[in-house]
Length: 555
Length: 49
Image 1 (cartoon, rainbow over the protein chains, first blue to last red):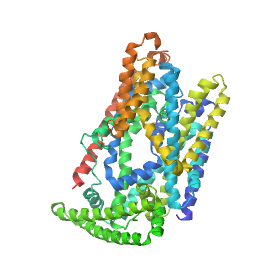
Image 2 (image 1 turned 120 degrees about the vertical axis):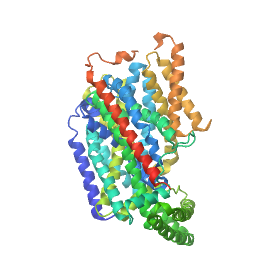
Image 3 (image 1 turned 45 degrees about the vertical axis):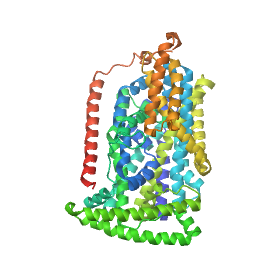
Image 4 (image 1 turned 90 degrees about the vertical axis):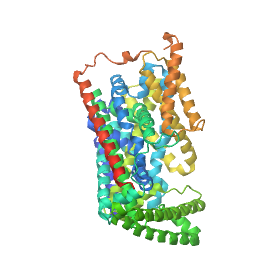
């Protein structure tokens, strides 16, 4: 990347740290540090909620997915608006009025300390590791693209985030999120405009090509428990997933607990309800347009430059032969794409068939190259996450590529800051203050909270920097982390049923996790979007059954 | 342990308009979603071959 682009990125990061520290005023007590004195306006909370979910994985992974699989991933979010509305009338008023710091604190008031501690522990376990993953994902890509050592790539994203989160708490995190959302959306819109200018056919013809390649297929109405992205898994499974995430995950709950009132907390969630699907459509459309752009411009055969170099060096003859075939298919595909763009709808069948045939042959050569990269490097060679950064560096004009890279870093920072802040809150409020030092002063808890944020930040950086060695461990923890979500939602649903008792909630939680583990291990096989439904329903059914048996005083 | 009702402090003044305001917002949110899904459906229907 041009050194001046680096200057822009570093200047932006410095500004964000300065801005975060400037906004950290009012964090002299833990109410200010963890909940910004419950005084953040609804629109800032709402943008912060959206920023928290929009991680670097969205910016580079989802755009890549748009390029390779098209728009169908958007079905994943179909349950979100409904989930937000349900939360607005159920959990949000209960938790906001309970004046709690954490979602789990509320469970002690409703049930008992062990239910609170168990759910908080499950949160720390799953989110602690996922924080490292959120940091590792863009760091791996930056390391490969820019040739940075992994430690430097982690530090570039992690250090500024840890600094402003540790010093400024939720107040700094929320206001930085607002700033960064403006940058991210601005960068996405600028990339779409640039793509439309650079693609040598009209936007209508570009969409025609994308449609011919199946990239604009949004809806799949088949009802299958094993197919991840369908309309029904999105609406039903997605609703439960979003209820679990926004209703019980401290990184989200902490956002709306910082709102001024119940009504403002509800309104903040409704920002996501309004804008999440259009925003995801924009992100996926960027990927679709990158796909169309590469119909007229030779794409790299391997998008990961490290793998490209490794294969060229280890297997030069095989790489060269593959490259020759790839170039030939790409040239034919280019011609076919132009014919699709020029053809009218009445006589497009022949040109579309030719285009699909050349596309399939080009894809097949690329699949061979990916298999070769896997053989040579011994690493997974799927390079979806590299498509967008390579495009940004190779084809975006000066300044805009820096803007895009800054937006990816901003997205990573938002997600990590929310995680660090929520991990620190759960550690201090649900464990340290609850079990170790209940009578500490506010100043003491503030000091411990900052320390906890710093420790979680260092932990996340170490996990991310060592992600290559810890890869399978992280994968396992993330996999098991998904066991907890639906079951924890089930406990919160029980909390809203007056007849539910503590014993039912505690035992139900284990039964829910057991049920999810069973289907995750194929007894029977069910796609992951349904896991939350199974977990939540099991907890509620078992919890209510045991509550009916338990004597009232046991609650 | 307390029950759900114990968690709602009686000191919180009930906002008479809040329910109606939220119902209006709910209708708006769902209307925006229906429009979004219709637009996505049109995109798929018009351009998919």
